[in-house]
Amino acid sequence: MNKDEQIEQYNYYLPESKIAKYPLPQRDSSKLLVWTSQEIVDTMFSHASAYIPENALLVFNNTRVIHARMLFKKSTGAQIEIFCLEPYIPHDYQQVFAETQSCTWHCFVGNAKKWKHESLQLHLTVRNCNVVITATLLETLHNSYRVHFSWNADVSFGEILETIGEIPIPPYLSRKSETIDDIRYQTVYAEHEGSVAAPTAGLHFTPQVLEDFSSKNIHKMFVTLHVGAGTFKPIQLSNYKEHTMHREFFSVPRSCIESLKNQKFCVAVGTTSVRTLESLYWIGVILHTKRSWNGELTQWEAYSLPQTISLEDACDALLRYMDTHSLSYFYAYTHIMIVPGYTFRVVNAMFTNFHQPKSTLLLLVSAFVGSAWKKIYEHALESDYRFLSYGDSTLLFPHNYVHK
Image (cartoon, rainbow, N blue to C red):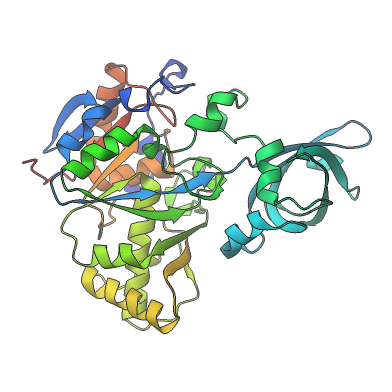
């Protein structure tokens, strides 16, 4: 094994006391660590716009976290937890949430060994309607289950989840979800339902911070990547290249691709936006070079594709594809795993929180700033920054960037 591929190199000691278990009272009162020109600046997130150049493009992930966790009981009293991961046909998120009779999902199932053939039922009230929802286990998959839901009233599945489901806060918070999480584990611009984890870099933004960016003529664009539970999956193998990256669905409006085509400076809000934008480029390369395209970008594909295609040419290929197929949104799946050695093609700077040791997200950060991640994280630990989903933020620039 190549020494550079050892996950242990991306380990650090994270005391439990440094993990933010709850959000701060004000979103933008969190700290912001700015890494630029090989220097660290400590500031507040409310001042974030001061560090972004004018006319930049700021790209957000506007996914919305669903109340994915439902608790059913068997006739014996045994509790079964059903955690909705993604619709069986993932393209149709909006259609599935609008369904008023039945739908099928890929799910995690807690206490699955006690759920065999019996259909489970749950009684609830939605818009003054008495609803009985029935869950039927259809199939055991590799690491999840296929579950069919049906119900007896003219209400949508989205309304049912909102009524009985719980927000699936990260397992490392070591607590149950509370009322505060319904509001604060969503970004203020969350729009499209589908995630089971928040794009946490966006949790710091407030209407005032967004207005501050607009006043500097910094343009905002929105993409949608529905964050899967795999984002919390630790790398358990000593060689991180043997890790199997999870699949996530994303969609990007035509206007965003047109803006990217001639954009000089792109700032991604969060690793999910980074993965979306970089995946989009490589899919454009596939289309530009007329390779076969089956709707998915595989885990290591970016590293073997031609490396000399311009962003403009990649965007043109995407736009031609959309024209041919009469699409207003480009959508696809990505498995991309961004690790040290990766060359970023779209993203020039990124906002991101502090990530878990030995995680795919920390590998992505290291790919962007190199070994400086250690200096950044050591400084944050020594300076009482708060870590993980409800923690403080960083604004990272590549090592050769000079702030003006």
